[in-house]
Image 1 (cartoon, rainbow, N blue to C red):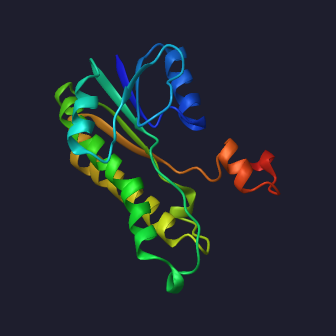
Image 2 (tube, rainbow, N blue to C red; image 1 turned 135 degrees about the horizontal axis):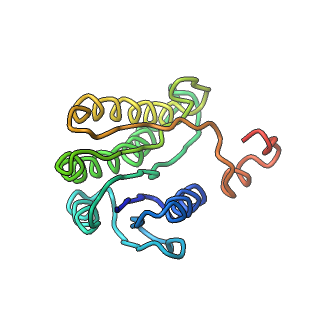
Length: 185
């Protein structure tokens, strides 16, 4: 059974892919760059592109699940001083890949009688903090989008879920927050 992992070449993605492989799934990683963990197939595609996303999803045999880890984080000033272009960039980076993946994958998942579609939102969507309105709004959008997918595809047997982590222990986060207590991540 096939699982597509979007954004599977980073810290979180590598761990997810390794666990899926260990569990016995055939894993295809879709990413713009990078290398997939050993044992997984790799497709380079820009998930902001609808056609490229559809081609990547269509190339996964016996698609049973999609795990979307694509997204981005951004901090900045309060809204009154924030840049609309950065706000839009975060929305685009966090929501368009989820939309394009769902648009391509949901017919296949529903057609097989069920499956799973999982996205990563963020705890900040429910517990905001200052200086990240674009990021928080985008992650809240991901959560709302997944809830809409659940409403549309539940009867077809497709589970749509969002995971809402707080800070994930990655090299990039350690570099960005060197004085934090990493043991709490």
